[in-house]
Length: 291
Image 1 (cartoon, rainbow, N blue to C red):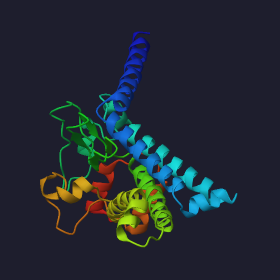
Image 2 (cartoon, rainbow, N blue to C red):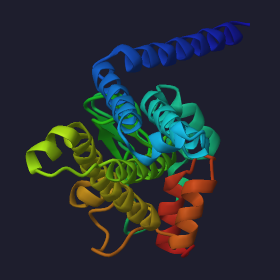
Image 3 (cartoon, rainbow, N blue to C red):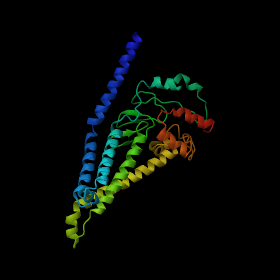
Image 4 (tube, rainbow, N blue to C red):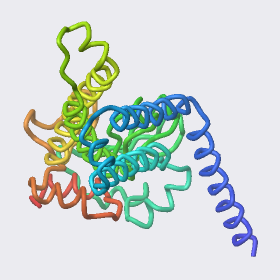
């Protein structure tokens, strides 16, 4: 009876902690960033419809298929932005020892893991005081340890980790389509003028919007390309940039990645496998029996 009461209280505290973290994500320091992102998105969309672009021409002629599809795609990109921004990226909670025991990686079973030249000891975070699973890292901005930590993104004001990384890549892909489509629409709206002064006066606002979209398109393209490349190798941005400082990687060879299972299996595991992965098992199995 006492154990049941303790378990109920523990569950209640975890739920309260998650809701408090969600409240902080919505109304914390990222509120201005998210508001600016939404305002910029819809202002540029409005500019494309107010100028003489193909979107406006089709709207005026009653051909609403492409304008409606464009607006829906913009809406999907905004919803994905908020989903990635507000969701739990994979915070390591204080009760993760229960999960680790269930998965077979509790501290008392560490001696059952095959010992290799790459064997390591799981660390306890000096900030959170929780045991860090392999590939996790403490984020100084979020003040939490994050599973399969990739990076903290100031654009969305949230960490990219085990739970939201695939959604982040999906968001980048949708956002890139929207930006390239918007850039094409902006190009179609430029009108001719006899002089440069008159042309800039007529197309100045649209030109400014097109410039912003062009810069964002290049940025998102580079981000999407780099993340797809790292995903295909089954590595993270943090591991790629700080390999020499990470305990479980600094003893590996320059071209050695203990988590790499081949490009196709890496991509399949990233996009299609939703269950949490025990990276300790992958790491030590790679050291003994190739997967």
